[in-house]
Structures are given as C-alpha cells and as structure tokens.
Length: 393
Image 1 (cartoon, one colour):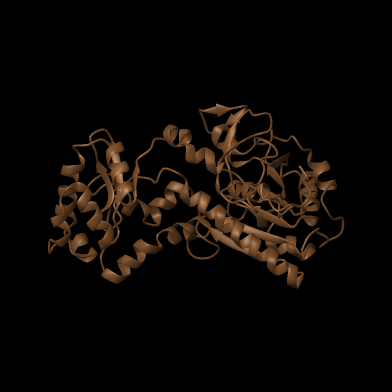
Image 2 (image 1 turned 180 degrees about the vertical axis):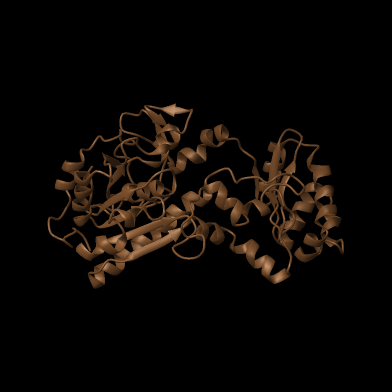
C-alpha cells in the first residue's frame, strides 16, 4: 500500500487510522487514501455494516462498500478486548491522523478520545465526525444522512410542492461531512508543518447539512418566508428548470436577460423578451408560473435532441436529464477519466474528482477484505515507535 511521493500522491508518508463505518468517515478515509496516505481501517469483528448493504453485491461486499473503501487496509479489533485495545493505542501513537465516527461517548469510554491520544502523541490530528456536533442538547444523539436531510430542512426544499418529503438521492450529507473532515485534516496538517503540533478537528452531519442549506437559509432570512419546494427549479432565477419535451426532459437555464432573449428566439416567440412581465429576472421569477407554462407548451412539441442542439447553437445552457447508464456511456465521462478500474479490472469505480499536473490519483487496490491486515502487524509497521514521531510535517 505504501507508495513514494508524487504529484498525484501528495499525502504519501502520512498514516491515517480510520474508525469509520457506513459512509461519512469511510468516504473521508478514501479521499485521503486516494491522495496517497496509508489508511488503516479499524473494524469490529463483524465488520463495517456497509459491507452488507445490498444487493447489489460486488466481489464479496456490497457495491456501496466497494465504492467507499478502496486503497485501504483493514484490521479487526475488539475494543472491549484489553489486548486489542492496547494494540490500537500503539497503532495511533505512530499515526499522523485519526478519524472516527463512532457512537457518541464510545471513544472516551475506551480512552481513544482526542485528549487521551494527543496526550501521548502531540503531533496527532484527530478528526471527530459526529452527528449533531460536539456541543448542544443533541450532541449525544446518533444520526444518519436521511435524518439530517429531514432535520436540517433539506427535505423542506426538495421535491414538488404538495408532494411528500423527498430525500436527495446521493448521500450528500454523509459525503459532504467526509469532505469537510478532509478539508479540516489537511488544514491541520498544514499548520502542523509550521508549529509541530496536531489538533482536534470537529465536524458533523448536522453542520454539513446546514452548510448545504446556505442559500435557502439566506433566502428565508432575507424574505421572512419559508423557501418551500421548487422541484427542479432554482428559486431565484427563471426560467431555470426542467421542461418536458416530446420524448423526455430537458433542463434549460436562461439565467440572465441576454440568455432569455436568445431562448425566446429559439422558441419562436421573440416578443416574450419585451413582455413587461418578463423584461428582467425579478419579473420572470414573480411570473414564473405563466412563463413556465408558455415555455413548456412549445418545448413539448419537439424531442430533447432538437432543443439541446438548437439552444447549444446560440449559447443557452441546456442539458438532457440523463439516466445513470446514459451518463456512464457519454464520451465526456470517458474523456475526463472519472471511472477508474481497480487492479485486475474487476470493477470500475468513480474517481476522486481532482488531478495534479494532469494526473489523477491512482486506484492501488480495491476495498480490503475484512481483517486482511493483522492488527499486530499494522501496529508494528506504524511509522514511529516513540510518541509524536509520525513521519511527515
């Protein structure tokens, strides 16, 4: 798993211990692993629950688990076993980073909390990825992506008006929290290079969900009104939504007066651009029901491919609404190299969406089999035998 530093592996030489389960912390661990870090995933005897999240299953684990745990090692430890607990503490003594999303209170109960770990390894960066945050009346509650989408108001602005609550399909809160964890960890490692001291990084699903609500919350505070659901539409712009064509759906985003005038020309109604109701964005937003109905009446008579070609020709932003299979087959997906094979070509996975000097981080291994790296060996191989002797920075 170890690799030399390179532009596409800037974290080579950094050791990360991941007490991660489900999505959020494993996603953070995978990003760090993709960037070259040695990531040791610590699992209980039964393994990460996500291993069983299927069907579909893919080469021994769920497809979800495979997509969140490549480039890692797996060690099995029972933290209730004193011998395993001591090996874990030895492992973290020589590590650079610890990331955990264990149940509230569990790490402190077993002496694995940031205070205890940094007391023996002051250079350690410890990232706590919680549910509701480190403080407050809900700090001890567990949380999951759909619960946070509900609690933080995301479901209140997602879906169609008058319809039941809808969850955003991808696990945006879990994966977003993983990304914030990585941002915090990288910032802490950067600071450690100057000061020599690690720190404790805290983030949570709730804080992440609120961050995704930045614009709807600003709109609510400015207007004094609930934003409400707007389907595919962007509330502050019109026309800026999906429209039904003859054979499918097409998103049209005419976000300024110039683009709107071009759209009107293509639709065969140039006079709409000078209609007093639609002469500026505020007017179009205020009269969006009428405007959307007028546009959809025209769009519905031609297929998606017609509107994409016609609008692209005049520079109006437009996109078909793809299914997953369609976007996977699109030549742009191939061109940017966002689907990468695991060694041996058994699986193709979505890559980390960043490149360095044109080189994308490599997939060195598929997700590990449970306990494929013995705990004792992993602890012995940690890059430091004395407190605070972690390798880099």
